[in-house]
Image (cartoon, rainbow, N blue to C red; front, side, top):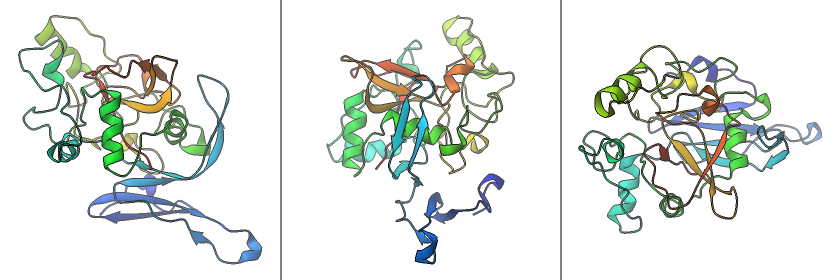
Amino acid sequence: MALPAMLRDHPGRVVTAAAGVLVVAWVALRPRDEGRPSLAPACPPGTALIPAGRFILGERNNTGRVDPFCMDVTEVTVAAYGECVKVAVCSEPNAYRQEDVEDRATCNWLRPGAEQHPVNCVDWKQAAAYCVWAGKRLPTEDEWEWVARGGADNRPYPWGDETPSKDRLNACGEECVAWAKQTTGKAWTPMYPGDDGWPNTAPVGSFPHGATLLGVMDLAGNVREWTSSKFDARTKVVRGGGWSDFKTERARASNRTSEAPTVRGRNLGFRCAG
């Protein structure tokens, strides 16, 4: 499996490929007087091992701290969520309905050909139930931001300093604007020039140039993501940007929004941690 240049020869990191899925582990060094370095326990295939750290949370400007944990490399797909539905643990998301262009036409559940797209139109309880079934949990917002910032690199965007572009994330480009005009008659605004190839969601992992140093993808676009953290007494913290977002600040690692746990948004999905 060919690795992106950004993931080769990085001191202190081990990169492997298992079952065609990128798995990244961070090497934890013992003190010098203990001799050789040790490799921290590997995470399951499809996840990245994230090192511990302290950092300043961007929007809140206070100190965050995380212990080592595993994070899904991509958002949870329709196909993966469907396995949980098959065993009657997870309930079905809002389903695709072609004629409902303002809402369910962009839901991926039961949409033909969307099996490898992120599952969307799911509420917080559905996301949390899937992660428990998978032996994981929803990430905290501190964990999510730590990953999106590239750990101690403190990046403004998951990929670095460069502004969002059509090859780094799936947000609203010219294709999204054209889709909105044709289907809803509304004039949407693009986040960046050019066509990113997907008027709505994209298959997970389609934008490798937007990956973090540890290979975690789609943190800036595709779907916004539920976290386990409370925003206030009534809402949960949502992180990341979605396919219809047009403001560049939505793609920033520090961006945070909130939703009531019962919301099933077409722009809203999740990934798991452990």
